Image 1 (spheres, rainbow, N blue to C red):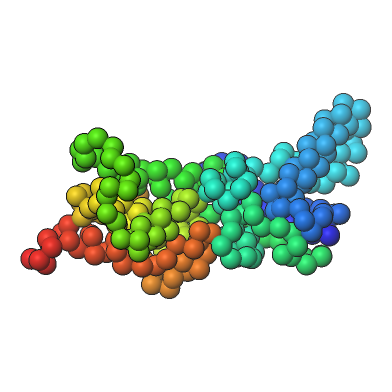
Image 2: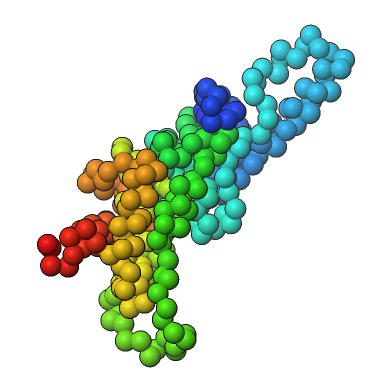
Length: 271
């Protein structure tokens, strides 16, 4: 399979970025999207090495290798198993590409057609400044967790899990919310760059369990305040976040977050 890649290149957060076009050929349909980028980077490294060799002997002929930027394309990745949440790319107008319930590393080239043009960008959000090329700084999500996404109340020794009665429905909802990997796709998908789905998931997976109920309202208040402070926008109610979430986090977590936040502001009785 052959593709024309239009990739966002940007030297740093303060530099002016632009798209560079690369042609890549003979890609297996079973190749993952990140493996395809690895192949491109191998070609760019080879080209850069050749440029360096030619510069000492054939300086005037360098124009024949006409790619303005030949250093490898920078992109985030780690586990490549859909677990770590690092591989966030905006592909053809969708976070993580043209498939549902997956991260970028789980996207395969068979989801595209031979000869396709593919546009690849970093997350577009004020709280996610570009570091270089396709890599953005997502530490804002970590700061939200640090503001209150934990349990600090003394709960005594660690009892056997089966001794704490938790309704199965609550346990299942807590586990579903806890599956959030913090990739930031919800922020990238939202036209207001809202982090409400992320915060809602992190609040829900604790608030639904007995150990997290003690601090539930205060936790929501602290995390929402930090979210606003960092420049994330308000929820748009378009549910683009739910549609693009690789872990299929439900929008009901946003409703739970709002209830916890209102409780923190006005008390359980609404006064």
